[in-house]
Amino acid sequence: NSIVVTLDAEQLPGEAYSISGSIADAAGNMSSFILPYWGYNPEPPKLLINELLTEGSAARPDALEFFVMESGNCAGLAFFVGVPGNYQLRYIFPPLKVVTGDYIILHLKPLGLATELDETTDKTLSGGADSSAAAWDLWYRQGDGALPGKNAVLSLCLSPVGNYMDAVAYSERTVDSDSKYG
Image 1 (tube, rainbow, N blue to C red):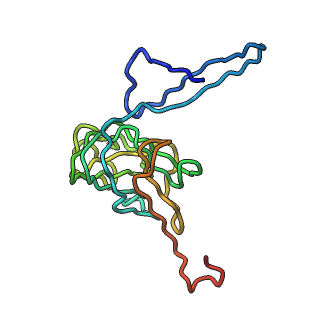
Image 2: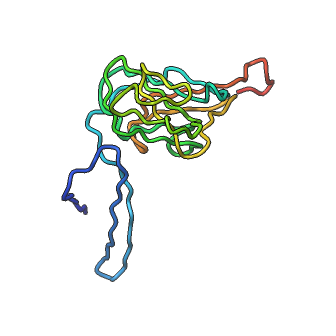
């Protein structure tokens, strides 16, 4: 059996939504549910994790640079320090139309300056530490977004529950650094 739900209004790409309901069978057994979902983005760009800065300084705080391989709207793309089911940090991209060849900088340790503005319409709007007039500057605002300095997995997905777009694993370990290195 199935149920088809039709929504009254269009869902915004990348916005968090949920649907809730209750079901009962003929014997009176009931169950309720809340199912989260994300507004569908019909035109996601193709991004690559291009550069990362770990263990940054006050002048050059931790940040990531993404390169736009294919134009689209970033609304709802999800970056993780970790993977969707197991992460230390998650950033959901705002609506941002990008074109092939653009760069996006995600600043992970903002200093709380009034000039640290998310650039969604004008690349020259932000003036925060290490911002760039040639790239789209975005700012992580959910606490300390420092990248792990020595070992981590970073992933970029089409949505918080979507398919992987790109990923990076880095480690300071080498074959010679540990006799049990796997």
